[in-house]
Length: 204
Length: 192
Image (cartoon, rainbow over all chains, first blue to last red; front, side, top):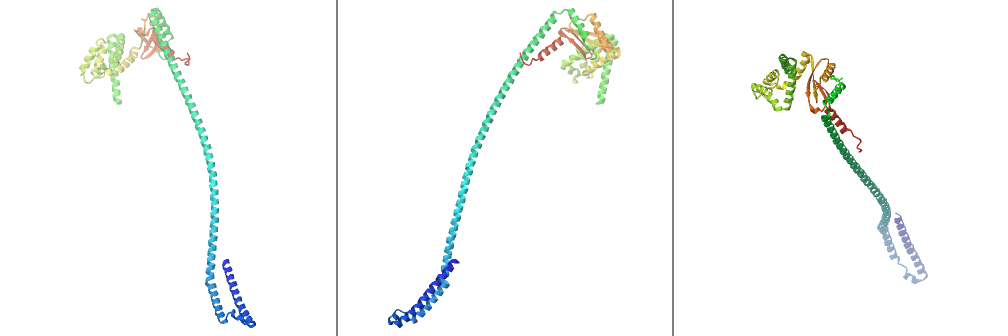
């Protein structure tokens, strides 16, 4: 709209200049013709000047009606194109700055994440190491305990076997001594003592 | 089934009563005690010899064959006992002999008023010991006690007294076995 206004003003100024010049020169021509007869040679003939003026006015009207609007439209279109391009370039710049900031943020996040991952991996490694160590210690303790238990069991079994053997031998020796060495009188004395010490037949 | 059990119980009572009366009539208390011992021996034999036990009750044999078996195998036994056992075998009821034995032992106390004490020792008893054991049994049981003595060297010493399954085992072998078990079971915590 601004461009159109300026174009109209420029057309008006050109037309006014042309009219003023055409209006001035005939006066000058008539004045000069009156003052000196040679001026008529350079002054326009009114018979030619009027049609030319009319033609010029018609041309000016046609241009003002059809030419200048088209020209103004082209200028406006061009202006719009440039403005859109500028706007797009600004947007592209803003977008690129945003993308750049985003990339920088992502890069920073990635760095943070990588640091975190490394720290986590290190912590996990330490934990696994501690677990393996603890498990190995537990297994070793279990093995030692089982070995001790097995040794203890074998020791007890050996002691029990020895004890059993000693008991059998002792009882066998005692049985043989009793069977061979006791006289009938001694047997009867033992029977008498046992009968006197025995419990009741009623279980009381 | 309840009726059958009652019938069997009555049959057992009849066998025991007939056996007791026959033995008592034939030889008095001594014959009764002899039959009691023989019956115990036969029961032990039947428990250790399943072929004999099955043969005495085998329905594949005729009653006459089972009677002949009893008369041949137990020819040394008292006549009254042999006859009753032969009848039981004929009827296929020889397996009732342990129950007849229990009933017979009960009749000893009921009809003769005595209790039989089976005494096992390694050496023969003298009169003093017999008197001592008899007085103890009569004091404990409140009946006249009759001793049935048996010598068994394997008990090493001491005495085993049995009144119808109530044992007083004061034999050397039992005491040594108890000592053996105590020695084997005693532990000192595994320390040598």
